Image 1 (tube, rainbow, N blue to C red):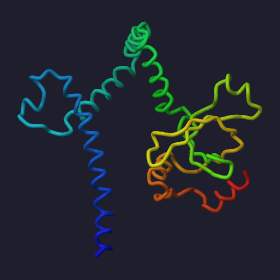
Image 2 (image 1 turned 90 degrees about the vertical axis):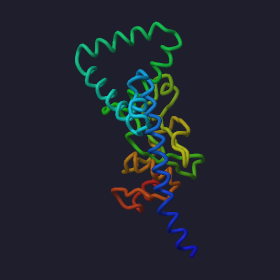
Image 3 (image 1 turned 30 degrees about the horizontal axis):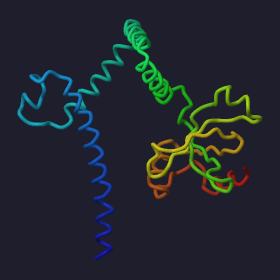
Image 4 (image 1 turned 120 degrees about the horizontal axis):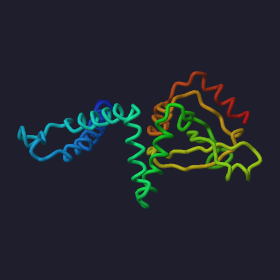
Length: 210
């Protein structure tokens, strides 16, 4: 009986968590409907709440924004808007900090979070999964004799938290797995094992040679 109960949990727990996360995302995106005049809000027009309408509106706004700003006129409007924000002291600091991070993460040509690495953490005899976030600035590299890289070491099971370090590039091992596979591995605390392009034994051998 215990076996059947556990089997049922293995079926319903992932489904329940998935449904809860999707519901949370949809309800959050539905808040965009509050930007519309009350007279044209769907809930007031039809008399009841329809989940997902605000999410569709949000996606449409994002798409149209990208479409408009892709041409020369749109780029001029963006530069004008950024020029206005740059004159507001507190807003300027917040906006440009967030913009730099988003440009780095979502840029197709950037190296941020493109490579999954093994690094020595929290002591020389242990390994941790990390993401390469880029190259350190000159103010850092001028004090180092060896080539450094900047890495983010996420914590499990919440990879949004973690530690940021500069490490020697020679002391890292690049893993042949995707960022998505690495995130699943971290969130599952090692239960969901990624499928590397080479056998696990070769990974161990590479790590031992470091």
